[in-house]
Image (cartoon, rainbow, N blue to C red; front, side, top):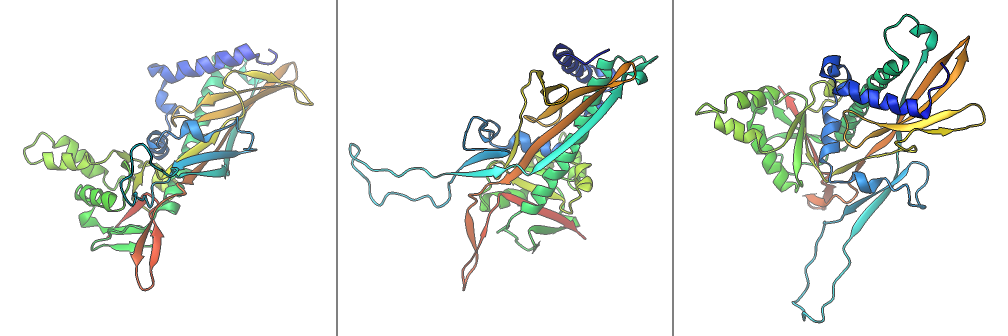
Length: 349
């Protein structure tokens, strides 16, 4: 067998689709524990289409432009104006050019000699390996998303009787129940979090599940209603893997952007570097909405057969909204802190 043609690479992509969809082929093997990045990618305010501007000649290398609407410090007209002759000011569109700083890759090779007397075809083995490698990449990116949230959690102006330690609000174990949803609803209002959602390490999971099971009971409806205040994502595996010490994040969907870019097209295309030949294409993440991986295929001689090599790469980053509004946290002298749109909570004894 010689090199895998462009058409064969297309068949491998289709084979990966079949393996993923085939419930008899243990799709759980390819499903990543990546709840946090799933939530961030799903909930971000439709930034996927505007952050990757490959056609913009001003942007080079791994640069992307992220645009936010600056809603801080809105002003009103001094007086009502004539309808036929009024003046208006431009809206403040803030943008930030960002060089994607995160890159992660995976690779593998298959020697045709190892396939002798093997029930798998080369195409089947490549398809399954692409799925397992991208699963591992998805989980690595998930860990990076948690580190981003922990590093960018901001000031919570509604500490109430609790202790704000750094950027995380310490909540006693006795209060870390479904009642915390009510506390967070107030926090979201006072900190002006837009369309917030929760990512939790499992500290609230037992109470959340119990509320779903008890909702039919006469005294269980209240707990169920509390859990419905926010969409909640539980990442029991991701938090300790990252690792982060926060237990729960309350996140505004406008607080961040998950940015990525690709250099290849979806359709496998042959390229001819100085030595040999490469086929380049993209494949989608099966776990992270909107993310695609760049893939490079090449082959080399091994006796009377060939070695087939694959390289998979993701270029991405997490970016905090650069126009978070400042709030007054102390006076004499005035001290301001920025509401980042990400609040952290930690359970303490």
